[in-house]
Each structure stands twice: as structure tokens, then as C-alpha cells.
Amino acid sequence: MKIRSHTAPAENILRYQPWLLADDPESGPVEIEGGKRHGAGVIAKLPGVQERDAALALRGRQIWIKREQLPEPAPGEYYWADLIGCRVETVQGESLGTVGAMMETGANDVLVVEGERERLIPFVPGQTITTVDLVAGKLVVDWDPNF
Image (spheres, rainbow, N blue to C red):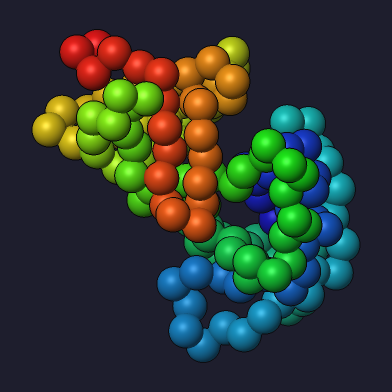
């Protein structure tokens, strides 16, 4: 099967097993039988998926893993999932809203902050991002609230 991976590099998805296939309450954990990078994507062999029709039946399913399967991030690194939902305020203490999503732009990641209006704030620690406090669920940003 072709897999669209959001890990970096893409083939890292093969390291995290078992997989949980979203939207299938009947499915338990799935241990893949093999896989490799293939062009810009990844291909994987799932148990019981021998023919094209069986693979097509799984099209569009999301692959999930349990949080415990991920390595601890290095100091100063964060999983996007941990940032989503955090409150965002300026260094002056003005609330801008909460992180609703993250975007990858190539140059740097970007916070999508949802508040009285949507703001796109570059996630550049030490510059626009002055504090990340995951315990408190808060990010402090050096950002003009009028921008």
C-alpha cells in the first residue's frame, strides 16, 4: 500500500508499531509486515492485504499511534500536538488566543492562533517565541498584537 507519511523523514512511520487505523472500530493494533521509502512516499505491507481491492478499501484511513510510542523530544523541541490548544500571549501579557493548528512553510513552522481574529505567527524560538510552558499550556510571543 502507498502511505502518505507526515513524519520526517517519511519512512520513520515504519518505526512506530503497532499502527491504529482510524475510523475502524473493528480493527485492533496492526503490526506491518514490511515497508520502505518509495519515491517521495512510503509503501507498506499490511497483514491480510493481498490484493488491490483490499488495499483500496483502506484508502483515506489515518494511521495513528499511541503517544508512548514517540521518543521524548529534545530540549527546545516540541510535538505540534502539544502546542495545539495552548494559550498565546504577548510579552506584554496581552492575550492573542489559542493555538488552533500548526503549518509547515519550509522556512519555519507557523502557529495558527485563533482569537478575536486569526494570526499566523512564525514559530522561531528565541525570536518570536520567547516562552513555551507546556505544563501551564501557554506560549509567550514577541509579536505586535495589531499585526
